[in-house]
Structures are given as structure tokens and as C-alpha cells.
Image 1 (cartoon, rainbow, N blue to C red):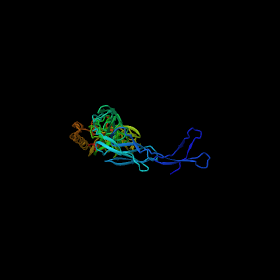
Image 2 (image 1 turned 135 degrees about the horizontal axis):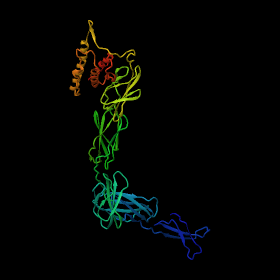
Image 3 (image 1 turned 45 degrees about the horizontal axis):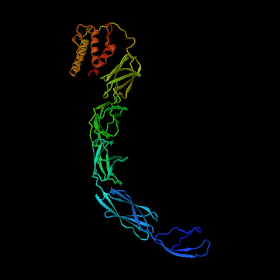
Image 4 (image 1 turned 180 degrees about the horizontal axis):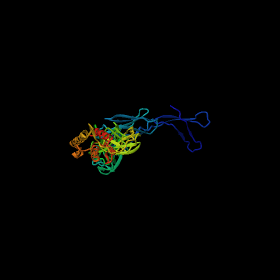
Length: 516
């Protein structure tokens, strides 16, 4: 037996004492003494009758079970509660202990009831004190209600759900949570069905429902999942394809509602490739110089629905660096050059000492005229197309000294002398051979698809001609230039009083290598 000290007041009519820490079901002997006295003068024996061990169910306030069931009770009485047992025949026993020996604290356990079948289930509750005394067995009956919840999408942002109702219900709460996470959407209704709005297209949701009854909310129903309809993507608009460098380009387009990826098809001169991206642009590199490249785009949603392709758009890269630049003829006042063809080139720009001298289209040769004799010139050729200029080549050339200054212009009859008598047979023969050869090339061009008229016989010399007439010379010089673009203006502009010397004939002969 332990000692308990108490005090009573002396002046009260009926002295009373207050004793703390008296335990239930205990026996005590009462001893009295005056304050300051040495000995106890009175004794008495009394028993404290203990309060029986009891339990009260605090929670839940209704009898409906979801996937979990939380039960909370208060327990008191006896010599202090030691623990409380909670038992279900399918789920087994759970034990709740107090944080310390107090007369009354809440005792709480949570059962995982997801495996319970639908129907009525009993939970048995009993409390034990520190001496092994126990309370009466209390039975808590709960119902696991089968809501039979169904949910399905009715559009890209709507869905319809329905379920089996519960008795004594004032409303139902529906919760939809995206499987990707985020804040749940909550709806309330007094009906056993609902149409939900404001959902996201092509999104999977987890749905559950619970009832609000006279005793509060029931547990949640089982979860069902549904996916809203996907938006069928349309063909992308605004497709552009632009160079960002000599061999780089970017294709861009407008975003498409509902698209999760874009398919990009690319055609180069030597290959066809397919790419995918979630962006609204795609960058290309290592493009072939001087070539057209093509691209088109389609949109696709997460369900694999395809929009169809855009029209093709193209981009032309700048020409490659010019190759094969070479000198083909040079004299005192002109320089003739030629070069190799550059891919997809429309124009060739010819610069003389960094000044644009001319541009040619569809030709691979050029003659720079009106130059000064014995002068150095830098000739540069730059290929160009609609996208810009390619790399250039250049050569440095010095013109010849030209005709000797002591030449004089005088009438000279072009005759040969045999045994002292003039004859022109050799001159006639060579001149007429020249006319025939020019006509042969004219016929050749015509057969190749470039119709070219031939020189008439009036341009030939007769046995009686003592001179080469200027008009005849101009005719053959112009015809040669028409087929070769290689006869200088000075040679083609021979006039009546000009003297036809060997220098002119040399120019005519040099034009033949440029005839096709």
C-alpha cells in the first residue's frame, strides 16, 4: 500500500480532507494528526470503489466503409487503460496504445479495407487496463457500399459519370484527379449522375465518389479511370523554310491545337529523311551547296491521329565556289576567260580590278574589252543565284603591247606574184575555205538545236577579186562572233578604208576554238 498525504481545514464546521492520486479499486487506512503534532491520533480504514473499464466510439460517425476505415474510441476506468483491441474477422487485430497512463485518451487505428467485399462487416472493440481488467465487448457495424461507379469521356473536355446511391444521403461528392498529378477537380450533386466540364483533352483521370449522409461523409468508392477525347490535329499552317547560313536552314510553322509531336519530311538532292519534334521549328545543317532542298510538316496527337501533310516548300543554297577559271585569249585591248559550270547558278558576275564589268547568264565565258595595252588586270568571277553569291576565283593577266606604233594605214592590194605576174589563186582558196568552214559550224549548231544561218556565197572571193572587201570581212567576223563570242569589236568593225593585215586574220583564226 502506498502513502497519500492530504490536508483538512481546522476552522470548518465539519473538517474535510482532499486527497490526490487516489486510484480506483484501491484500499486505504486513514491516519489523522494535528499540524505540528508528533503522532497520528486517529485511524480509519476505507476502500475506493473502482470505475469499470469503458469505451465509447468517437469516429466514424456513419457506418460506410471506403478503401480505408479509421476507428477512434475513448477508453477510461479501471486502474488506467493499457491498450485497446480492434478486431475484424477478415482483417485481423489492430492494437492502439496510449501515449501515457491516463484515464481517458483517444485510441485510433486505421484498417486497409480495400480487400473487403461489399456488404456488412463487424469490428469488435475492447479496452484493457493495467491490471488486466477489460471492458465489455463493443461491436461496430460498417457497410462497404458498392457505388458501382462508372465514368466515360463525352468530348475533349467533358465526361459523364453515374453510380448507385446510398440511403439517407443529402449529396454526393465526386473527385477527378489527373494521373499525371495536379490539383483534383471536385464536383457536388444531389443526383446519382453528373456531367463534368473543364477537363483537359487527351488526359487520363482517376474518378471516385462518396456520399454525404446524416452521419457525415462515407468512405470513397473504388477508383475508376477514363481518358478524355483527343483533339484531332489540323494541317500546320505558316510553314517557312529559310537559310540561316550558306549550308544551314530552319523550317518553322504555327502550333496546332492538340498536337503532341510534329513530323518533318526533308528531301535533299541525294536523300529523303524523316524527323520528329515537339517544337514548331526544325534546324537543318550540312546542306548541299547550289541545290534545292524541300521540306513539309504534319501534326500528330498522343493518340496517333494524323493531320496530313503541308505543301512542300523549298530553299536554294548559294552556289559552290567557282572552279576552272582560265585564260583563253589575250591581246592588247581584251582578255577572254572561261570557267566550269557552277550548280544552280543563274548569273556570273565578272569584276575587273574590283569593279563590276558585266554579268552573263547561261554562258561559261566572257571577254573583257577596251583595256589598255601592257597593263595588269585582276579578273574575278563570282557565281550567283537567287539565294546569294558563292565563292569566287580570280586570275591576274597582263595585256600585250598591241600593234607596233610604226604601222601605217595605206591601200594595199592583196596579191601574190608568180613569175612576175600577179595572181590571187592562193588567197582566193584560203578565204573561201574559211567561209566553208564557218558554214560547217553553222550547220553543226543547227543540228544541235541552235538554228544558225550560213554565210552566202557572195561572201566568197572570185578569181578577179584583187582585194578583200571590208563588208565581206565584217560578215565572216560577225558570224564567227555569233557562234563564239570571241571576236573583238575592233576586228568586227573593219571599215572601207581599213587595211586588212595579218593581225586581223589572226583574230579570226583564234575564234575557232570557241565554236561548239
